[in-house]
Image 1 (cartoon, rainbow, N blue to C red):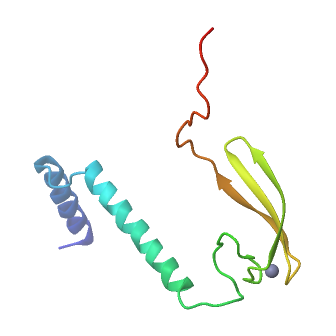
Image 2 (tube, protein in one colour):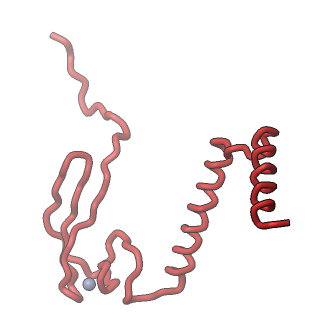
Image 3 (cartoon, rainbow, N blue to C red):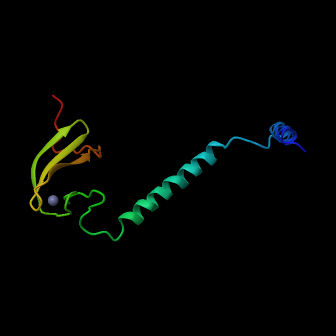
Length: 119
Ligand SMILES: [Zn+2]
């Protein structure tokens, strides 16, 4: 058997496999399952990395906590609305870093405070 014969044989087997439908593309369900698996893996890695860490180097951002030094001694400044988002400005009382917390606004309900009468 020469390398050329081997290659030809392998090619023939692959073509035969395609004809028999042995090599099928993944279904959308299989792809979604793979993506879910991958994102679960990433979440697990991030959780393992951030677990048991205290103080600097601060990993992750939490509301009410300075992302630079981990202090909750924040002084709040102006809040600014931009479209569907709300920014709360802060200055850290411990390390003097400043920034803003970003919130997304979501419609919940409409409340009637006083019902008017149609003229
Ligand atoms: Zn700070």
